[in-house]
Length: 391
Ligand code: HMG
Image (cartoon, rainbow, N blue to C red; front, top):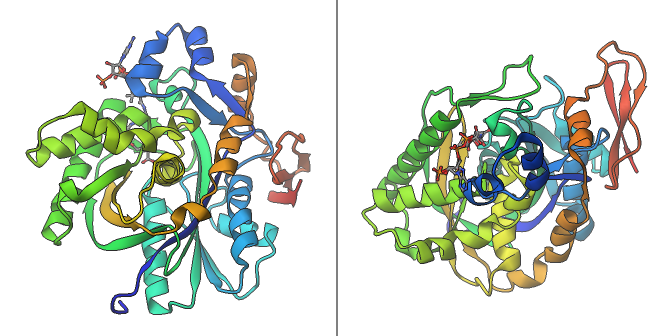
């Protein structure tokens, strides 16, 4: 690592889908008390992709404003994290590279470890910038969370992409060393290659997450990290927003702190505002939490933020970051709020239709209906190839 070089998140932008299903609509269909969704799991609505939207179109929409602001001269690497991969061989980031007209002198790769993949991408990007501080890395985390209809996980679906530019002397958040890391072989949530929807042991997955929080924090402390009290706020992976509260309470108890709900709300509350409307976006979730915090909090200059990234299976990482003076001038709060507000609500039948839709797999020409209002779309499948285009 190069001395005291400061490396971190220089820019951050996210996108989500055209459609949205409210939990009120889902509750009216399945007879669930709305209190379970709104208060119990802390979710209000979930983003639902149109037929011509997927991880690539969301990723390109998230990354385009970053490329427009900073150019591509210094970006020599794209790391795309996802667990909703559209191909077993080709990296989804190559489609993004092409849609955004990026130079051929770029290395592009895809990473996977459930929801933790976005953090792996961020940490690997930081390593690359330490090796050569003149380079920037485009990190993209993009996912569609999909469970079977009428499964308890259904209420925790969602979709979004976060794009981050990682560079030396970042304008938003300096990422600190050390990191606390944790791996345990557990089948709490998984998706075999032949399935479009995830399998999950819901309550087991919550225990696995809490165990991983404990493990990652223990390692963070052993590596000489900050004390818990030093953090102004905590961005947790949010499969549903109440999970962040559960995790934080667990961490406080584990560290022998008293449970003060007002303090917990102050440390977590603002990080949940986007996730409560978007739903689980897997790899993007922690960084939607960061976007919500930066966009909506009063001045956070020089404040420390704790990050806890969890991916089922399982891997977790705890690390800290410091908010950089002047960060507010670089935020994208308006477009972020607009991306959530402009989604079009769908009724239950339309949601079900979108949920059940899949392209034929016969290798024929299968154009996708023009539905998205985003800047890029999946034009269709032809000869088993996915064809993308600007809208
Ligand atoms: P469930 O079992 O149907 O719900 O599904 P529940 O009965 O546990 O109720 C949920 C909460 O609502 C409870 O609160 C209830 O008390 C409360 P808690 O006890 O937990 O504090 N509740 C109410 N509150 C107010 N008014 C009411 C009411 N009724 C109940 N009327 C479950 C919940 C999370 C299991 C389900 O949604 C699920 O399976 N989700 C998918 C898995 C998941 O999200 N796991 C989280 C940890 S794993 C993870 O984060 C990784 C992941 O993102 C994947 C990856 O890494 O790639 C999933």
